[in-house]
Length: 223
Image (cartoon, rainbow, N blue to C red; front, side, top):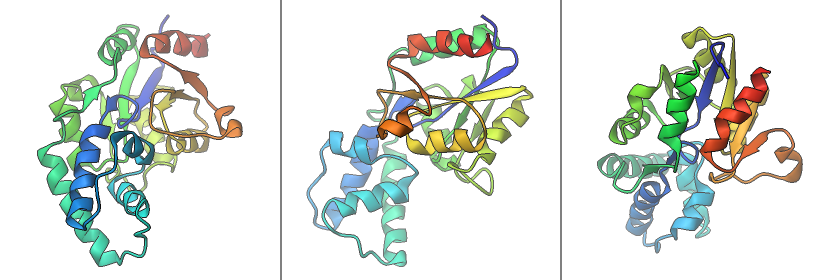
């Protein structure tokens, strides 16, 4: 099992890290300021994906609060981020087996990268807080390049920056799968993540239920 030619590119929220508890805290803080009751954690898990703006829009939509002016939404985003930065790893943790899986892939020669739609301010802060930042050769966030997932450029940039011949995307949402398809790159989806897929969409990716299965799945790609 050798992955010297491969960069393994990980999404962050819902893939490497169960960050929903702290994202829920930030969103419920904003909702409370607008007079809305908190959303339960399991509901928030289903709303996470594609950044703070999308999360807030989905959260407000749960209360049929959809006609939000741009200026007002920018204010909500600022409030969300200020709270989230102060609580970014209160309850967020790597999913079980994450660190052992990263150790195994690195030991077999893979380059490791993160491609997230968190901004650099939030992405780097979360990875630093949970002790994972130094494990990755490159980290590409929403504002690192001119485009972000589901555009293919961030994934292709991970390949370029690590000097590997190919990449594979490890994610949990259609945003990750769409980016991989656009980059002509294989994609493996974490069944424990936050995304939802139709039957047809599920056929376009590989799936895994726990991180200990990942090295074996990647090894088959190298055969």
